[in-house]
Image (cartoon, rainbow, N blue to C red):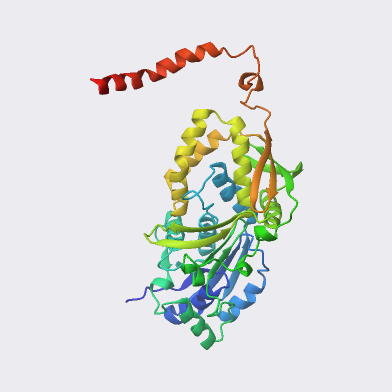
Length: 402
């Protein structure tokens, strides 16, 4: 294989096994300068040591960029406004992070005059697609290096051996090789023992949630206030988007909220088993639905819901910057203009129970919905409604009887 001529490359760097090895591999393979870039998306760990670690591994410069508030307000919240769920279960915590990471990476490449970008995604997964679709939507001429598609390593065990040989400090071991991805919205786990879909995840693996069995025996009640589809306050206290998610992660984690174990369909065609923790996002998804139940017109709600699966696939497959995602986002956001109100929730041993909802411009009218005597709704009028809607069914029945 003929290698491209590369002078300077910006690597999306996490400090984990793959990207630590990639720094040295890029220098050896291309003889190029490597700039490491790490996006702080709320990993919940100290990132400053990564500068020294990347430099010792061979990086000429290291960028660590705090993107938590941008991540929450411009990526997570738009997705939550659309009630986005992939295949009925996955709240897309990994997928939604990739376009933002890639966008900032491309900005750094422009600042540094780099002629290439690189990532640590494998040739079997979704992230290679997500990163590269984002890169190319920003600069169609950028050179992309995907080491997992080029090098001779076949497994993470091979990388661990390479890291040991060249004294590259990594935390992964052959006994615990599963992959972990963490950000403000979730923690994901895959690989290793999790590749057997019959094998239950080990309890010590979970980083942010208590097991429901060990969660408190007393529930917690909270109120989440929404304005135009966005959560703005918890129990009357205003929060920035990122700090609001952090607080709900804390509250939900205590009560074992947001654990998901699923086998999903990757974009490239194979099935994959993943385990996720999304405490705050799961709470927000439930609260948002509760406020919408009061504030969204029936047909608008049903039309929007019919598009959720398609919208989720667009994000899952890496098309965040596509015209179709932007078009759908406009529709989703238009529907959210009146979604202002408050949801009251009870958290208890892995469950979220809606106990109340209110809205200043609620479409719910007790004087119409009541089963008691009223002076607004004329029940007799329902007879004509039913007969007109039954006409086609009656004609079908008559046709079948001939």
